[in-house]
Length: 432
Image (tube, helix red, strand yellow):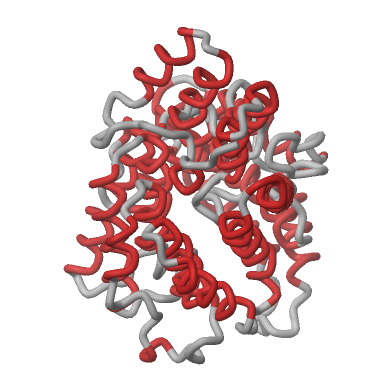
């Protein structure tokens, strides 16, 4: 039996040989993993052209080389401008496109579709990332029920082109697959990541019920022992409170009895990002409920917490945002703009590390001050990052008065289960 010109036994032999190049010694600790990855990719690069599975593995190997070197696939890897693809990325993309354009079942090779999503999702949101949209649709159509990760992966690409409901759907399916794993006594891969991706997208889509449900599921995932995830418990525990803020549910924020990350996770009380994020949400909610002193108290608590370096960027955004809310006026605007600039400078990460897009809030603030032209600029920036989201489309309508934006906002909010009243409810009541 032959496939693509090779006897299957020959392909299997080649796979074994390539594995020996990747792992030439049994002493993993002493091995030069970077060099081994480079050698493995080079070996597959000279022996992959006759078998679509090996060709897919070659593409993955080129992508792994960039990973072990600590590089992105693109020279800048920014949120809006990814830069030029690296040489390894060009080779990987060419190989994957060859597989996907092949005939028969090979064109639906799950590894190739999976890798193509990864290598195209960092492209410019909207038209750029749309290069991988067909691969995401193809992978979703395979309905790989045994793999939560493969069910989840189309959502990465859908997020970048503004198909937020499809992100939620793909991650609901991933959650079902994760539960199948748990039912068999096995640990699924990235269950909190799957849920968080869906929550972030559903919030952009106006689906508050979905967002709340899966935020609560995230807490259950951590309680169940699956805390080694991305986001980990420090990032993910108070996703629920961030969702409450997103939808203006101030009472629900302050009534949550479990906002502190449980001690069972071994985090020092009052000294972790989970509690910091909870204090931020409570501070914003207390201000909305007319309790400014308690909001100030939460801000003081945040300032007194010592956080790991990896949390400093998002902590800065949170502090600036809460300070902006407390300050008001021109000072508040400048603080909020600083928060947005910080967020805009982050490298691409999906789902976003801080669920509230600050550009939406800057736009809402400027609308309150009557500065519509500047507000429109903020919403345009947000739509570059999160295409077709109704929050900023509503903002564009309020800033420009153009009916086309309201029509697009209504279409984007079709699945929304609450009324869309402001681009950013935290700053909806700013006045001149």
